[in-house]
Length: 223
Length: 232
Image (cartoon, rainbow over all chains, first blue to last red):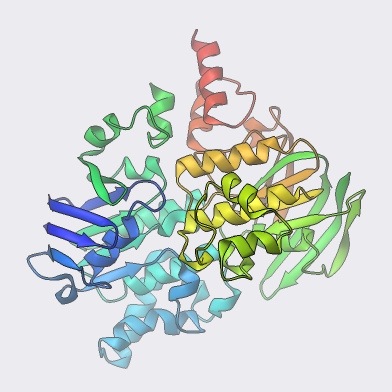
């Protein structure tokens, strides 16, 4: 369960929102506050006012895996192996356990062949996959992806969706500009100008967006 | 005006890229999976990378610009207006074009991703180069901004525009399709003839083809119109 009460932070203002769904898509125009909401839910930023509770705890007390929008900015280590290993290492896992987790996380994402590669030689999409493997390397309770699919082709984006669907996380909160992807979520939050304009099942939310380009292309073509 | 790729070969580590073909005037879309070499091809076409063998030959082209996938790399000034000035453009006109009116004094790094992309894309379109190469011009943009970018691209009435993209929902009208697969560039030919051969086609286009429709171009509206013609 994600509970937001009287939240005011930067441009976002959410008086009351409770979401009890597993796969939650956050959508909306550029600059509508999606990334800010995800930052607060991940514990990266403390809200100026109000509270966010995830699984009954503040976000900083929840084990969260985060994949940012700009993999170039969030990758810290020069070798893929070390980047993924950072997650278990920072949690003081033993060397053998770290190695096991790194290999398992890389295999899940399909980048085992890149473990010895230098991060600087990877394509933008491959960097996003490394960030996803690092986020999943220590059994996160909640996975948060900030437009991680922006730099991925369809095949890779599907791979990310499959990995995310199989993860044991209680919640997967992601924002995307692909409405066809958002249409597959359990719950959709549409933000505009810092407020939650619509929230509910994909059917409920997209019913309010039918006249806009935010309506999924596959729904439109099948009408 | 054209760019010829003559038996281009480029290798880096395990990866090698091969390509031959001619990019004539009009809008070209090069699609392909992550790591297939789209960005490398863009750098080769921009003559930032040199091929191991073969050549990129430009004919009748006096200016060229490459939009990088991450627009941060283009920023050289500390305000949006100065950035426009650094391109030799009138800041006011540019701000209107990029839908950033009133933001001239902002630090470009304080713009959102979509805003920054719009700023740099608008600068390039307004410079109107003979050869314009756009590496993932739509990534991180919302659908309204993607549409705006598409219409800016479609407004270019002359020159060669090459778009490297994996976009699957909002696309511009294009003249020719290309695919990168495992480092090899494949020319699919001119639109609409090339559409049924396009393996990376967006789902709405694939759906329309499966229904027996023959879209005239690759946009959602082309697919819908073709379906209407088929289904009456």
